[in-house]
Image 1 (cartoon, rainbow, N blue to C red):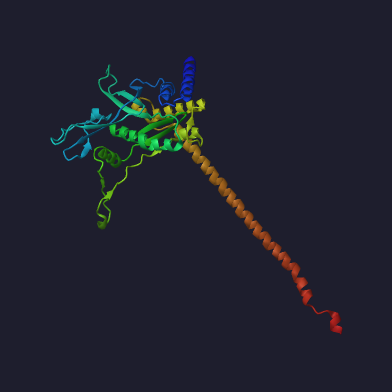
Image 2: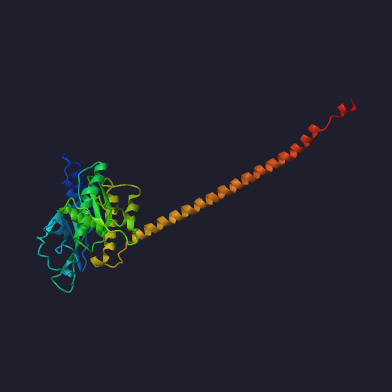
Length: 350
């Protein structure tokens, strides 16, 4: 209890100091997210085989080889977490030394796993980046979205390029008091190739092969002329906490803590095998929220169908009532009409 109280006190103090910084600098918010990462997201997250570490200013490295014609190829020196199991073929003589490009988020959460746990100290280590955090001072909404789709999106692509086994990456983008959490699934290889080639050759245009069933008159190649978009999405378990909000605010610290704990649980579920935890790589909370949402939709559809049947039956009853009224009116009008056309006896006698 005392540890939690100290963490809460530290968080409140850090938030207050950053929010009241007269220069509105970015650096005071580093203290806030250092506390969030180490005390709420990943406290006591080491297992018997895996260590979970918060690393500031971590370099995401995109390694590629450049030949004499200025073409790029995926490098055999990639910093992939699977590199311990890869056979590296000798480089052709015309290839120069590998080039490397870097993107550096403010914080990165990294798992280091002992491939052979019986070895101590471990000599074979595998690592995986599971989360990036790019801290910003207070921003307008438009600038917030622009940074997500530009700077953060590039960091995401570098993380996937450096680890061929990584299938999903968590992303936190804080801007002053407000922050968001998104996830990105691994993009298709053609999109990674596009970005890898354009790191060195800005004029590179990838040629995308057509499918085999394409007609002969379309035998040319289609062109991916624009950089691919990184598709961010919010997991169901976090979206349920947002409850319609676009962002989470440190004005509501209990809600922030709830979201942070759920993010950690979600990441541990997805990376459970690498982390040395029990699980099948799926978030049970996401599954439960999705099922509950489907049930609500199903119930609303059933209610709507009941309402439609009620309205239909009401309209049918209304039509029947109108028909009955018309029949009654006809019955009442017929004698009156007959009387109107019958000759008056007084005129007949005249």
